[in-house]
Length: 73
Image (cartoon, rainbow, N blue to C red; front, side, top):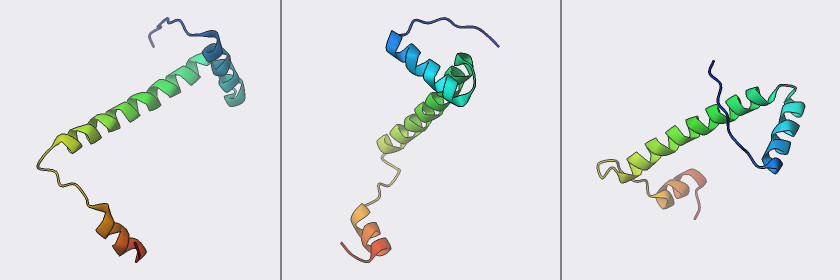
């Protein structure tokens, strides 16, 4: 593994330490988990954004779908 260094506000460091205590792991593990989840979400958002901008990808009309699934308006 590689080491990185960053500065964070005191409040964020305290929240990080509290999370590490609660999860019974060290700061590095919490940071790695958080980065992995953030990057997964970022990738998902990128795909969603690309699909929204794609004129060939149909956009769902939620009203008929809602009516079909719920049977009401």
